[in-house]
Amino acid sequence: MEKKSSYNVAVVGATGAVGQKIIQTLESRQFPVHELRPLASHRSVGQLVTFNGKQIPIQEAAPEAFSGIDFALFSAGGSVSEQLAPAAVEQGAVVIDNTNAFRMLPDVPLVVPEVNPHKISTHRGIIANPNCSTIQMVVALKPLHDVFGIERLIVSTYQAASGAGQSAIDELLTQTRQMLGGEQPDTNILPVKSLPKHYPLAFNVIPQIDVFEENGFTKEEVKMVNETRKILEDESIQVNATCVRVPVVYGHSESVYVEFNRPFDLQEVRQLLEQAPGIVVVDDPQQQLYPLAQDAAGRNEVFVGRIRRDLFNPNALNLWVVSDNVLKGAAWNAVQIAEYMVKTR
Ligand code: 25A
Ligand code: L14
Image 1: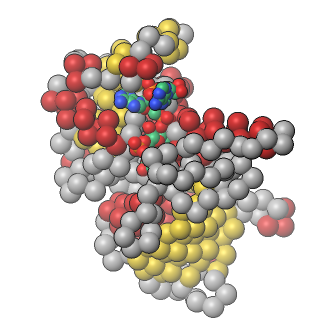
Image 2 (image 1 turned 90 degrees about the vertical axis):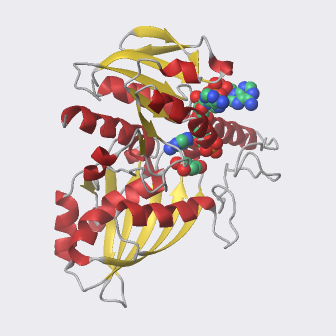
Image 3 (image 1 turned 60 degrees about the vertical axis):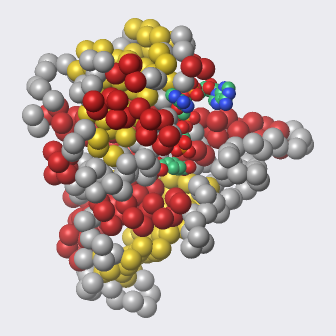
């Protein structure tokens, strides 16, 4: 991409939970946008999006919609990316893709700017944004991995409804009202819309995110395994994940148990985390201070607390890692990649 003073930016999935935040983030970061082109399905055509004080009509996402586009930020699901990203690239756009469609392809960089920004320049048209749960975990682990070397991870997630899109947010809020009113909750979306069974998330906890694989893990759990190894560029790291949906709207929380290759000093761990880019340490048990999803919502950083040694293994550590899944987990990470490309040219 040539150096310009401003860029034409398409947002695919502009009416979605992530697409709307991408547009807000482009505005709040004052990204140099010449033309913003919001794209969605035919259902949303004509709806208006407000950007920098202007009302812009949504157009249908189609191969022809990318002419003249410099950056195309996709978050309308994997099948839409598979269908349209190649057309966007052919017309000269750099695609930053929020879906699972291209992440594990060897020639597609999978990028978290705090962790592996050097991969951005290797792209051949498509840059993949990792899964939200993976992004916040690797931001917290990278500074520790560099010094102590991670051998094994056991992570349990507490994921917000917004990860499953705007319709899941709407369903959680409606169910909550219904149950408080003594009605039966409507259940059509979670855990996975296309599967036969649906369960209420309101006043509940659901240990399934995405579909199950043969090995008994869900696809979300497998994504955390594969993406963590790819981003940290270390295929020897053993990852064991359990991904769980909780009745929270914004902000994923994670309990992470880490085994390093060698013993560590807890004070050094804390210092490394405090100095690392994109991390805020919130860890003062005496004051009852630890990261909370409600505090992380609306923020771009990854919050780390409950930092403590394992009681038995001298090489092992526990962390509580919280971040806004639609911001650092999706919209902000994508815009941050675009900012890097614009600044380092
Ligand atoms: O499982 P998948 O396929 O990978 O999908 C993942 C989904 O997770 C969300 C996002 O959903 C995505 O679609 N998501 C959350 N975090 C994510 C992340 N980090 C993430 N996805 C990627 N990375 P969402 O609902 O928030 O946003 C969906 C957006 O995609 C647009 N879209 C859908 N199909 C499209 C398409 N755009 C182009 N072509 C297509 N074929 C979608 O636009 C939205 O912007 P929309 O036009 O469908 O607008 C949503 C409006 O339409 C109504 N509606 C929804 N479904 C139907 C419907 N109306 C009638 N019939 C329907 N079947 C909604 O009420 C809404 O108002
Ligand atoms: O792969 O439902 O980026 O919480 C991220 C959100 C998959 C689904 C991804 C969720 C999506 C996940």
